[in-house]
Image (tube, rainbow, N blue to C red; front, top):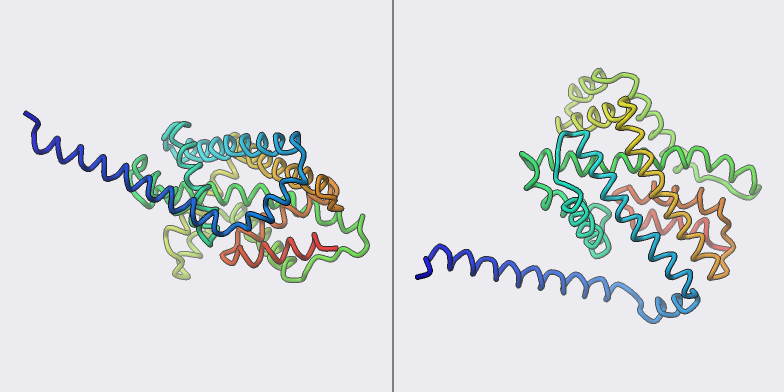
Amino acid sequence: MEQPQSRKQDLRRRVLFVMKIGVSIGLLAILVSAIDLAETLSLLRRLDGETIALLALIMAVQVLLLALRWLIVQGYQGLASGYPATLRITLIGLLFNQTLPTAFGGDAVRVILFRRYCSSYAKAISSVMLDRITALGAVLPMVLVGLPVLGARLESFAVPVWLQVFIAASVFGLILVVLTGRRVGNWMAGLGMPAAIVGLLLEFRGLLVSPVWMLRTMMVALVVHILTCLAVFAMAAQMDIAVGLLESLVLIPVVILISSLPLSLPAGACAKGRWCSP
């Protein structure tokens, strides 16, 4: 005779399964409602089959590399969820990033799902945020090298003052964290900075000053960013948009950097409109 506890567990599994289906359908509905299907189909018709296949391949490789980058970060932190679980959580996070009006919605979902592999939510948050900071740390050198090169090629090109300030502050903060070590952590703690943020910065510094871990994460992150630039270049070429490979390698990292801000939607749109308009 089936035990009541077993029936409860079976009912719970069924309820969770129905809830997962409901959430999936809801997210897909939100995603579809946010897209102008007519305009999207019109743009897709301008792409040939080879380009669509290339873009699909690039996106698939990027997802695999995103999971690998996070797995490397987990290894540095002494965590071990395994690649299949990391890939699954990464895919779910990407879906939520496309449906929620913030760049951090997917990260919140990743934290919730990754909690089962950590000792606490604090550790899960630290892992997800360290992965994001690592991605930004890799895009910063691309911006620093690319903008002067593009400025030398295009006389009319000018970097907005606010962006110059943002990049300079990012570089200064990075150098300060690397050179001063725990002293800057103690200084920030003395100013009332939350211990979680201080610990995250120190963890990021430890990653940067560890040659093996730094090379592993940064190389994977750089490849992901370069693939994004190549995808944009391929689409622009098919749509007769005058954006060369060099411009893509320079401007897309800037958009990625700006999109990391809390006001990512307007900031990213402004960046794209500013440099991609005629």
